[in-house]
Amino acid sequence: MRLALAALALVAVALPASAQTYVVRHLNTPAGERDPDLLPAGKAGAEALAKWFRGKRLTAIYVSDYRRTRQTAAPITAARKLEPIVYDPRDTPALVARLKATKGPVLVVGHSNTVPDIVEQLGGTRPGDLKHEDFGDIWVVKSGRSRHARFAR
Image (cartoon, one colour):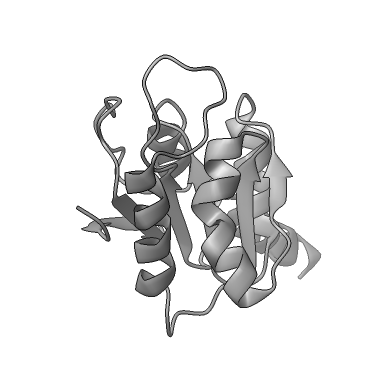
């Protein structure tokens, strides 16, 4: 019996996260700056993202420690009264472990070079490489499946 329980526990750890995870790249910024603020189009996109989440449950919001990710999440964090959780964008495995341990649906605001890895490591289909001008997309990952949607143009 103990062996069966131990095997079941190992399988549960190896399975992808079953809670829904939303992964979005930060919104519109100027090219080539280290830690820019969102452009007006990015601020409008952040409001569109907040509207996209109306009626959807969120238990946590993860952002990197950059202005553009914090500003992308700001309308949602304000509306939900959630304090964003800062993660290190250089350590995707640690972030994914935290996401899998979080109960309930979560939002991750990432970067062009982190979003594909995050989606894939959560068990979803890896998105193609993102270019600087790729803004307004969201990937929804649940139970090892992912789907892609647009929330802003």
